[in-house]
Length: 529
Image (cartoon, rainbow, N blue to C red):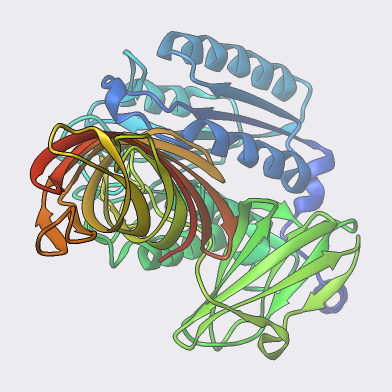
């Protein structure tokens, strides 16, 4: 008895010394299966999501690279019937692996629309009770489901079809299997939200950041299921607390038999790591190309890190003192400690948040522009330069732009019959206008908008007393027409704009009120904030 006690004590101490971990090493003998499902469409196409399908593709890469999943079935835009058939095939594969004596794990992930009874997959529906029954009967030692969906699309990228009491998936008795856990993106009375800057939902983005290492509070190089939930809960609530929809609280229901933790991912020797300083109320976004690879909220207690493939990244630090950024070239196996003082100041954010259904909600753009107009003063067709200042505000469905154009130029005068005479007049033209623009096409860096424009031009004409007895004439008029705009987002909040206007305006020229056709093209630059 004493000898056994000594052996066990030695084994325990050795485990502590050599960093015993709760058995990710079992991955060699464990068959890991996953099904990730994304669908941008619900039963109302006008409420389609932007990123549900693309974000599950990114999740698949993380599960494959960091989670050592044996098989990942990815469904993008599929119907409920197609998902049902794929689940049956996976069940058969799990049964075959288990028959060979292997340990098995299954992870199901869904991002898309849903209501209080079913997941919405286009016009088809997959009942929640069927998903629960499938998980209960699945021949896997560990079964996990992540459901990122809720009931309506009313505000700020809300997922779902109609407003109703929200569902919460309950975990059933696992019976003879090791256990089952289900994590949902919100509670029974909340809505889930999607971000244009993150190019995905807050919940799914935080899941992926956590799997990359941000959730590894123990700093053992592994992310467990409980660590992932705690991280996702805190970050999703922080992301959404100030939104019009309200804070979003992910829920976690689990029943697991046995001891230890379910390990989902671990760092690899080929990974590059970024470690973040201990700070309060500071967030870091890591960009790979134009996409947010991960986001970390630092704190004063934990040393947080991210594991990333070798490559070039841009890190943006957000704090009350302003924005800072730094570009990093990370080599395989390297570890880089980020120092805030080494990061350069930036003027503007590079991303924006979009409500589902169109429009860049909440975006404001202040811009200056210059260009050429033709036909403002006719008799003989003339062209002249102009300059202007504009302010654009975008809500959920449309953009409203207030413009003030200015021009000073010479024009050929006309007689009482409208015929040109051999005497020039000097014109001063100031036109305040309102453009109502609808989104035609919006990508990450380029967008096109079109709509209508209404203005009230002020025109002042100065000429000799032979032409104008008082030497000048001035007055207000009106202008209307169609306007089209294209923009290029150059980064750092800088945007390059090209605007084209075609219409007409009425104003007082010499002794009569005239109506002239107008065409203009202007180009300018502005900052989004």
